[in-house]
Image 1 (cartoon, one colour):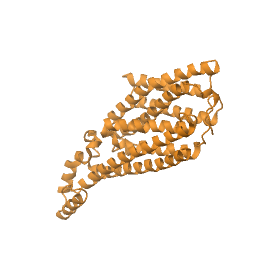
Image 2: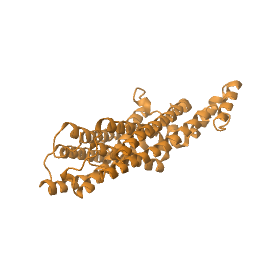
Image 3: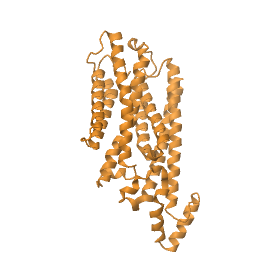
Image 4: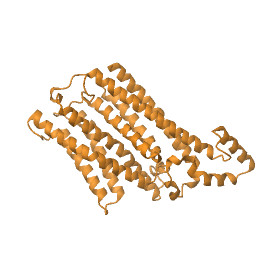
Length: 345
């Protein structure tokens, strides 16, 4: 089961990579289809899930102004890709939508493989697969992609964010497999408690949602700059992303959902520490960084609820919160020694 889990993780990385490439194809073809509308922000508020339909008017007008030979080539090209009609601009639009749908399906397949890797790892270890840093990263990244699929089911127009989400998945899983991997070992004595499930499950769940929330936060900062007229890197990367307002609302919704769960996880950890070590708080490095993350995320929610604070300032706080989570996840386990040093590296 342990070997099977390792193999499935490798396959899942490749599947996420294919999904990322498919998302990139949709993104690239979408650029060519809607280049003539780049200077009209109002029309870019149309949902990405609408695909080529949002650009038919401008594309048809451009095609009509061409010569007869170009129109004929466009018609035959459109027919070759699903009978899209007489406009050459429709074929890239249809292919973009097809690539996007393929990307979503492949991402779902990757999530199933991801889950299978966790289940087989847990069976091999005869416990929940959260006993070391490798297993923790696998679980957090799975929660992130599962939450993304739920969001996508609810709001299909956000599909183009999948390019960034699958990129994060590939990087995290590759890092876990190549750098963080450790063989299955029994839990350290301090973790043999029912609080292991209560505390770690809530922290893992909240961390996965925070991971997903960082994606629209970064996308919002880029897209907001683009809508304000910035045309330098990295703002031009956001040209085909959904409207900044929708990205900002998604960022807030995810963080507002995850923060109470994370708060409960921190409290449960303090109760467990009292039972295991005789004190609820001891300034252990992971305790300190958990507190820092909690303060930063609380600051983000407070800033988001304050009308006088600009939305981009609040978004930067969300990004900073995710950086503290990464420090707590990787830095503490790799560079510090403490009671929570169970990364297994």
